[in-house]
Length: 215
Image 1 (cartoon, rainbow, N blue to C red):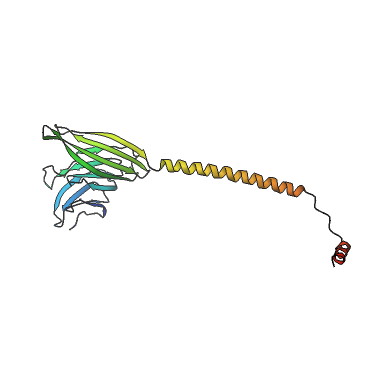
Image 2: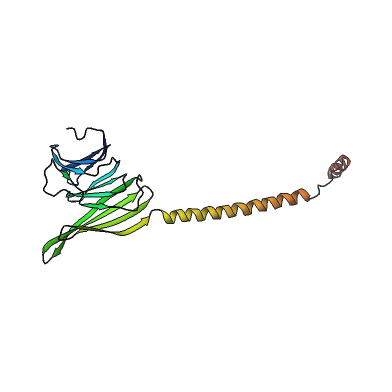
């Protein structure tokens, strides 16, 4: 089947293997198909402006789909919404991590759970993890209230390899100091050697006499 009129740029399959989503190089529309039938199940509107799709990811249950693009925004779609396949899904959640547009970003929906109140599900909570090409890790929680509105908050932000980089810089500084000390020591040694007087040459006559006495 033909998923898009333009070339594909990104694909993702659900954990259960029953859904496949795709995006083209245009990056404005994401389509979800059933597997293995290849039937169109949903069309997702990421935006009106073209963008490069960096990452697509289903949640563990397959209900939600996250999308990271060069626009710098993370979109999360609820695929359970009862809409026609000919209609465009709008993002249920939009997250704006502090990542400049154009920086490659990967997102993962790692958890989803219903919030219970007296045994009745009154809300949903999603856990979304984002890694930028600059090496920064973000973790967001998105929670839907009874009214259907979503609230997001940043729960974690870390820089990958920060400690290792500092250790490497410290080792370079130590090596540099050791190299300088060694160069200074060698320089002093060469100076002392050059100032020492050379012994006078031994006359050839003395060499012959020593040889006769030794015999």
